[in-house]
Image 1 (tube, rainbow over the protein chains, first blue to last red):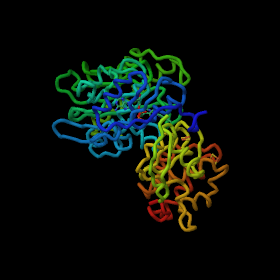
Image 2 (cartoon, each protein chain N blue to C red; image 1 turned 45 degrees about the horizontal axis):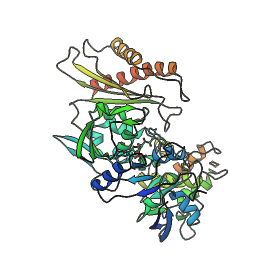
Image 3 (cartoon, protein in one colour; image 1 turned 30 degrees about the vertical axis):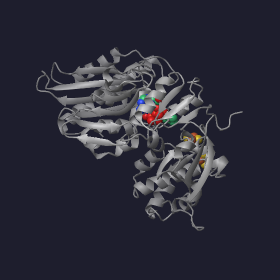
Image 4 (cartoon, rainbow over the protein chains, first blue to last red; image 1 turned 90 degrees about the vertical axis):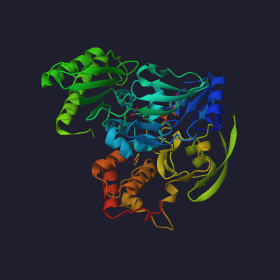
Length: 300
Length: 164
Ligand SMILES: Cc1cc2nc3c(=O)[nH]c(=O)nc-3n(C[C@H](O)[C@H](O)[C@H](O)COP(=O)(O)OP(=O)(O)OC[C@H]3O[C@@H](n4cnc5c(N)ncnc54)[C@H](O)[C@@H]3O)c2cc1C
Ligand code: FES
Ligand code: FES
């Protein structure tokens, strides 16, 4: 009989003293050891009977420097791997320079879950429904990774390989995510459709970031990312550059977003419904950003 | 499976507990320490019945390992009343009949207490946002919202209910 009710399978909790020890242990036990941060995905997966081979949970959140957010006016933002969603939401530097990230983090689950859930955990979990993935991608996020061979950088643009599959190898531990400074004047907006207004996983998520750009014919450049409509987040860069931004052009870009995705039917929504919602939410998000660019709105 | 000897401060008293790796904070509170006020509704982070304070912030105790709490400070619903005096949020929940079966209530009280500690004058939207993770199958929520609004109105200031 299992000792601990309710329902977590047997495993050993391991707390390495430093990153070298953690990477070594993870690499030596590639099938059976998993790093974890807030555990909000991990425990649910284990309880639901996934990850049956897991024997060791390696707690990497207490290693030095993991729980800080730092901002450098030249280099940008660094969010430590153990930083929680609530810390991201409340951080004034995130609010003033990367408010789209705070907006997306705020849409994750509930306050008490966000006390534990981390931004980096959301990224490493690589669920196509992850609320913050779009913002992290559009801000040009780069992961700092420690593996058995030392540190390296992993740009998010090539990180996601499928649901739950990433460029991480056994022994890899993400220590932080870094974002360059956003283009001056950037405005972002996140539209999430769940089964209820708050707290549910996205049926469709649309993230838009736009900024003035003197090199384009329209004078602007928009980037859009879609959640929950494919095995990995879908990114449409460089929209609305060719001709003046008008309601018709925004509508056309929303149609382009719809055409670019190939969602599936599942318990949270049919493929057809998802496609239509991509168009509607894209139109709404693009319009909000466009209005913001004209009025100085910086996302909410 | 590995066992761990941990030391954790629960509702002000230091407890030394022997826990297996896979024991949750929720199970430790209920089954090792006999603090059954904290409820198990879903064991999946959805319902909020298991909400407790961990180092001053509300968490779903079904999603925290007991062993992670070594050296931590935990406060449960049992800590809200002090010296026979209810926390203002508890009194307000009673006054507004915001309880039917009561299963969600311990979690609601902790989430509401946490909200009022960080924001003594919340708007209705902020109250709804703070209680998103606390499902109630009985009351329809309106009485709970009224109770929190009223507790804020009468000045449920941090410390008055003994949450600190
Ligand atoms: C009830 C509930 C509601 C939820 N609602 C939402 C929602 O609305 N939106 C949303 O986006 N998500 C939601 N989630 C999912 C989850 O909370 C988030 O994905 C969260 O950000 C994960 O972070 P964590 O720190 O808890 O991850 P963990 O569970 O600790 O880790 C997740 C995965 O990432 C890996 N990992 C974690 N940290 C590292 C690291 N430093 N290096 C390498 N690998 C690492 C782990 O091995 C694991 O595979 C919900 C979960 C629950 C239980
Ligand atoms: S029992 Fe923890 S959230 Fe339901
Ligand atoms: S009173 Fe019964 S679940 Fe809330």
